Image (cartoon, rainbow, N blue to C red):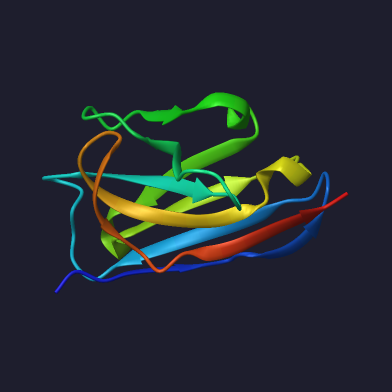
Length: 117
């Protein structure tokens, strides 16, 4: 059974930083991609950052230049470093194993990120 466990969320002031981690129970890096998504209250879940099939990081929308996705293959772990956080970044953040970039298959339980102004 696939398990994804996120950690690192919390409450931070605008301009602050957080680092999210997602530990997978098995290694997906050779056969799948992994990505970070978020869902704000009243909004649909959206892709925030992920990897291309070639392993290059990619970012969506307003997080470009502020968020950095990385991974540790040996630990089956993906990270999301979030800097210069804004109140509009407030959401539940999920990591996902994807069948292709932007196509999630398995979800973690989510971790809350709250950015106060």
